[in-house]
Amino acid sequence: MAATPRGTTPVPPDVRPRLTVLSGPSGVGKSTVVAHMRKEHPEVWLSVSATTRKPRPGEKHGVHYFFVTDDEMDKLIANGELLEWAEFAGNRYGTPRAAVQERLEKGEPVLLEIDLQGARLVRESMPEAQLVFLAPPSWEELVRRLTGRGTEPPEVIERRLQAAKTELAAEPEFDTTLVNTSVEDVARELLALVGVV
Ligand SMILES: Nc1ncnc2c1ncn2[C@@H]1O[C@H](COP(=O)(O)OP(=O)(O)OP(=O)(O)O)[C@@H](O)[C@H]1O
Ligand SMILES: Nc1nc2c(ncn2[C@@H]2O[C@H](COP(=O)(O)O)[C@@H](O)[C@H]2O)c(=O)[nH]1
Image (cartoon, rainbow, N blue to C red; front, side, top):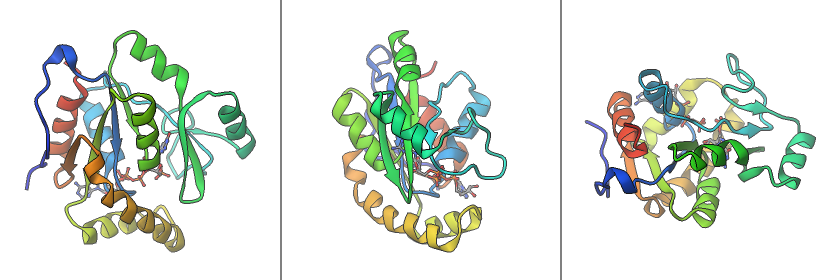
């Protein structure tokens, strides 16, 4: 089955939203889809988040995340340096504000890959943002992907799956849903939504 855009309304290029938020439950394939899209279209700018989570094997500071201590995260929050931030499954994550603002001021498209709480905060502060929900083909497939990734111990997987129930229930809050059956198809759909030409 191909990617299924639900509720997608074609938008003329000159009024396309410049800020796109991609959310969806942990393990649905957000990073995989974004990486696939950016491999073919490196011009799509993705915000690099700050996190207190420890790096996974292969993750690089400044590329996948800015890996920060709890104290450093406290300061980023206190100094208003984050556009939004949230606690997710025991760690904190936040979007550095300055880099996003810089691109938006130049009129360039911006992509955020963040959790539901962050998406809601962005919607509050920037109602013009478009919110895209990445859904799994089924609950069983989500569990298979999250478990199969092999990056979290069972208790963390359980926390993430609990959060996933809340996130899946929030799908109607989003402007568009893409079902991640095929990475290639979803990456193409997302590219069209982000509006990079
Ligand atoms: N369409 C797909 N079909 C099969 N496997 C997939 C698909 N998309 C992603 N995966 C696999 O699912 C696993 C989770 O993907 P990924 O890490 O991209 O999820 P994520 O949504 O970014 O998770 P998190 O929110 O925890 O960072 C990976 O092992 C990835 O290879
Ligand atoms: N609210 C925010 N959520 C973020 C941000 N960066 C990433 N995330 C989300 O956190 C979870 C877990 O990510 P993981 O890399 O530990 O698997 C996932 O849903 C991410 O999208 C952020 O800046 N703000």
